[in-house]
Image: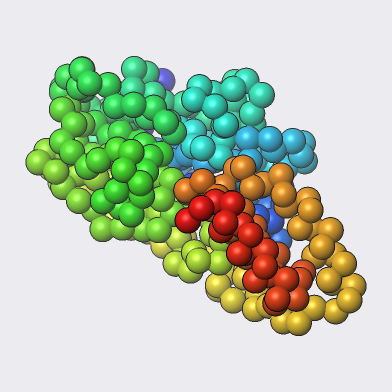
Length: 308
Ligand SMILES: [Mn+2]
């Protein structure tokens, strides 16, 4: 007997991670688990089908079993749809060696694609939720197979109209009523292109100091035609508590920062954005470890290498 729903709940990049990503000084792993748990509890109470917009994990190489066990506990009682993002995987197709794949294979997440959408009846309406994971192209053939349903497409793409690079432009997609995009962490106003409405609700996780907004999830209800959408604010700690102001470091903290900076090197290649962004962000995050003239020289060298 399939579950019955009153609507859909789209949840932006969760960046689940067993350690704190760039700049976070709080107990990030517990905080992000609690946020996802809140969203899924809200979805159950409101009878909404939760849909994850990619970057489910912060790193495809998440290997901490205690953390994956916690993620499994949070997901196990709820049907959850998902696509994968650039942080979940480093290749064009989903590698079997990443944490996202484990959740799909264990049945905790249902991966949706263009050809394998979720399909069900919501308040008497035939609804489909399809997905294009990171780097997947929009099929030129169009989505005629979706024509008989109200169809949602989850994407994890750079969309220029939402402030990303020019990878996928806002357009009408035949058969698709709504596109909901992850990847771009900053929330944007929806844009309609003829029959297709595009949304970019922003990320659930705040993983860099530039991300100041309180996170929202995007809800769709079907009590009015064709649909009704609303943004739900997710409870979170104040910005100043999760990104504490930097103060001058003691000698001991300095040693710790230096050690951390070397460990952080492995993260450079997993950053989003233009080539070299990861290196510049890495240097910025590790500024407290060096004197200001050293920082200046490092930055100068980095920019020379990247040739901006
Ligand atoms: Mn992301």
